[in-house]
Amino acid sequence: MMISGRNDLLKWKNKTQSYHFSYYGSVWGWATWRRAWNFYDYEIIQWNNPENQEKIKYILQDEEQFNYRRKICELTLHKKVDTWDYQWTFSRLLQAGLTIIPSVNLIKNIGFNSNATHTTKFSLFNGDLDSSPLDFPLLNPNIIEVDREYDHQYFLMRIGKPDFNILLSFIEEFLAINRNIQALILIKKALIIYPDLPQLHFLKAQTIFKLRQISLN
Image 1: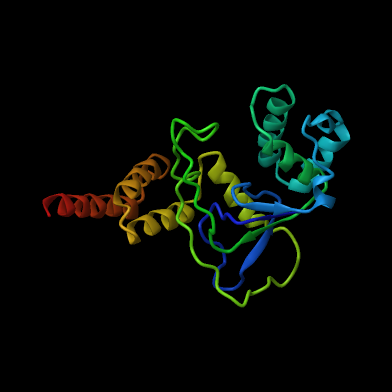
Image 2 (image 1 turned 60 degrees about the horizontal axis):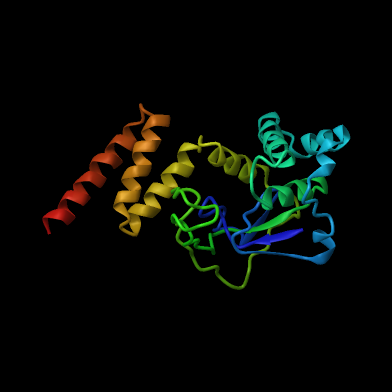
């Protein structure tokens, strides 16, 4: 039902395939078809039907993800949030509609500032992700079905509890392109979640050393 140019995890199985399928997907750089958009329910009225709620719960097959989505749908239904894309996600879920996600991130959102309509607060995960080229010819996945592990990792990031390996991939990416301050901020956040991991303490010391070397130069 949708193609997204953004991979919120930066990279996902990019050595073996060019894209995968998800029940989620960002609307920062996206496309759809009229046949899919015909299901769009801006007022999210169909959420009021308990059968539809059970259907989405069955589709997600994850109690925590469903409860998170239920909260979002209730807020949207009662107009507690000013948005249109939560409704689009709901409409796709109700149809068990898949989104194509590239194996690398292709979209860079530069619209994070005080003048923005919605994205006034910068987030390392939501905002200024660097983009990468997608290699051709494309490597197609073996089967058309949702990648539940990707959706699970995406969900953990959305609720602020990213998996350590995902955090590490972001930190390493920032360090590789000399975005050292962003890397340090992320390391400090990671230490709140994983305070006892020696690898994070080493990365923190390494990053602080790099920043001091830069300031001395």
